[in-house]
Length: 346
Image (cartoon, rainbow, N blue to C red):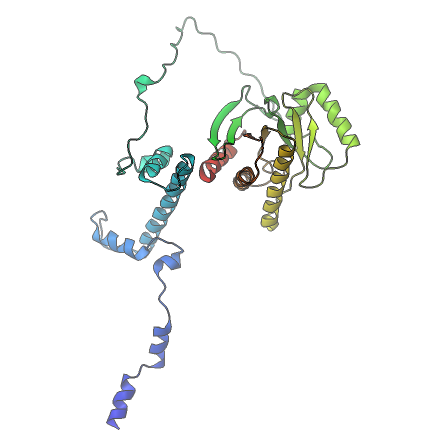
C-alpha cells in the first residue's frame, strides 16, 4: 500500500503534464522579431551604458526592433552597392560605402571603423572647382519684381533639373527629373488619360500648351476618329509641335482602398503595356509622370514602389533598345518616394 502511494506521488498530475506539453514561445517570436529580445535585455543589464539595472522587456523589445530595422536598411544599401560593382557577395567595403551613402546612417555611425574596408572615397575641398567671384554690390542687378502665379496654374521649372540618376546592371538609366515634361526631347512621353483621349490633366495641359495649334488639332482628330482606349490600354500617337517624337496615352486604373491588391495589379499591367508598346515601337528614351498618383488618387508611396519595381522587372526580362527612362516629378513627396525606391530596389 505504501509503495503504491509512493508511485502515485511520483506520477505527474494532469495540470503538470499540460504545462510541460506546451511549447515555450520566445519573446522575439511574440514581438514578431528576428533579433533576440531576451539576449538584448541580458546584455543591457550587464552593460555599464544603462544607468539602472531594472530593464523592462518592452525596452529590450523596442531596442531589438530598432536594431533589426537599421540592420535591414544597411544590408539593403550594401546590396545595392554590391550590384552596382558587379559583385555577388557583400564585403566589408560594400557596408562602408552603404553607410557613407546615407546621411542619417552616416550620422549615427560616423565613429564606427569597418575593418578590411579600405578608405572612404572623398575629395578635399581645395581640389573642387571654385565658384566664380561675386560681383560688387554696386554692379549687382536690382532684384526684379516677382511674377504673380495664379492658384490654378502649376509653376514648372524652366530648365530640366536632374535630381537622381541610377544605372541598372543591364545598362538602362533611370533618372528623376524636375522639368516640364512637354519640353523634353525624348522618343515618347506618357500622358495619363481616359477612354476618350482627355487632355485636361496636368500632363495633357502641358502638352497642349507646348504643342500649340498643330498638336491640339491632331488630338482633336485622333479623339474623333480613333476607337476608345480600353482600361489599362496604351495607345501611341504622333506629337506635332512637341520636342518629343510621340505621345503614349494610357488609360490607367483608379485607386480603391477596398480592392487594393487588384488595383495594384492593374497599375502593374498598365505600366507593362506602356513599356511593351514603347519597345515594339523601337523607342530608346521615354519620359513618364507618376501614373496613378494624381487624379486616380493612388497613394504616392505605393504608386512609386509599384511603378519602379515593375519597370525594373520589365527591363531585366525584355531586351530592347529602350535605355533612357525619366521620371518627371514636381512635388517633394513624390521625389523622395521615387528616390528611395531607386535606391532600394536597384
